[in-house]
Length: 153
Image (cartoon, rainbow, N blue to C red; front, top):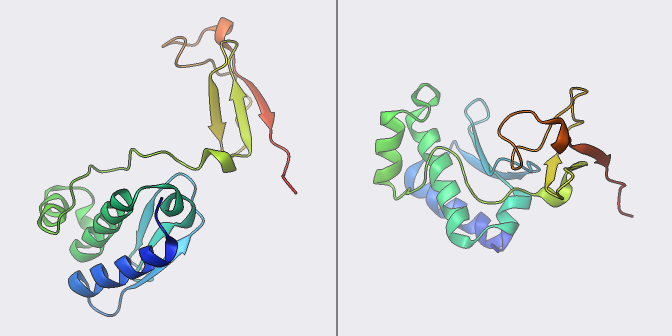
């Protein structure tokens, strides 16, 4: 688990090395995405929840991922120009993070008859959903029942 003060230090060092001084760093409150590059604000941000939850190496890789976006610009996306630059600066991951998300903050929990849990940060739709772990297609036997978590005081 990364220390947030250390993450700020890493961000400052990496951004000074690869970006000009017009770029800034901040933490945000995202719970499912690890990082973001905001071109309009010229800002790289990381989820404070996921940065605190993930390993030091995962956090550094997320920083490199977002710095690569900042360097090559918004039109590059995750295409070959971005991939090439990201690899040059030491990024070894893919287009999206595969580490855990902050499920503990999900407002809604769905449970199938076999006990599999599904987390949602937004209200689930009204259309019935079945458990994807139990059946690849919709199956009434594995219908998900949704519960809203009560806030913890």
